[in-house]
Amino acid sequence: MMKFYVVSPPLFHRIRSYLITFTTQYSEDRITHQAIRWLKRLKPNELRDGTIIIIAVEGKKLLGLVAFGNYGIDESFCVVHPR
Image (cartoon, rainbow, N blue to C red):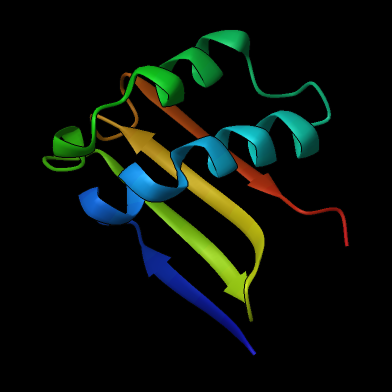
């Protein structure tokens, strides 16, 4: 069963590198380098005030993510596992 989670600052700190790898691997070159740099530079305490990451997980497998920076003004993208 697929579940959705809003990524909290402590969780983001732990899974940031996995989210970056997932984004790079499954974006099919549709996510800009600027968006990936934004994700790399995002600090956990910046996950507030319109900056949010939501992940879709089934078991322990990440199926997708959507990210918005500053209500989508600074950045916004969605990545989904091809299956």
